[in-house]
Image 1: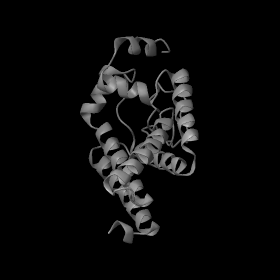
Image 2: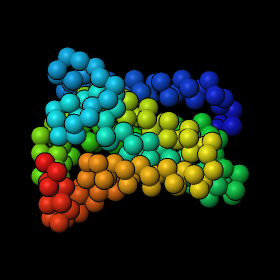
Image 3: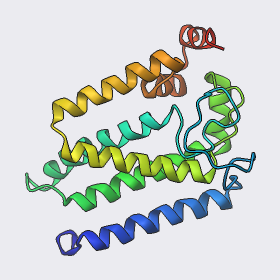
Image 4: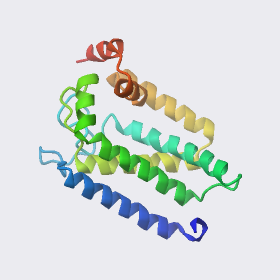
Length: 196
């Protein structure tokens, strides 16, 4: 079955998953775009109400990293479950989109929004706009695409560079975000609050 699908099939599935995610988020009551009425490519201020509302922001690198990590995970799982043959690239991309879209939906649930507000520096976080969530998935796709084309060593260097640069600039990144969401540490929160 998987081998009979071609790139056009996977492209259609990708678009349908993006549309389905947007529909679910809209049904959850998420704002389609920023309440400010503008659509910006980039938002500089991580502590403003614009964060997580536009096309890209300081958390965009974490979604690119998701794509890189999903590429490696599903490459490994494909070989594990097929006895070495591996899963088709399009199938691995679709799995990655499903995981990322699921996270975007969960991230915009009341439970996760409140968790961010309680445990992290995102005191004024009220969820992503649908535009931002859809672009978070697109950024993940870009990360997946990069990992598929770059040598592993360069992908690892890019992941480390993004984590270090973003961490140095905003005192937050994918690693810190995961730690603070799952097991909040007062020392990290205090260090992060020193910027604000």
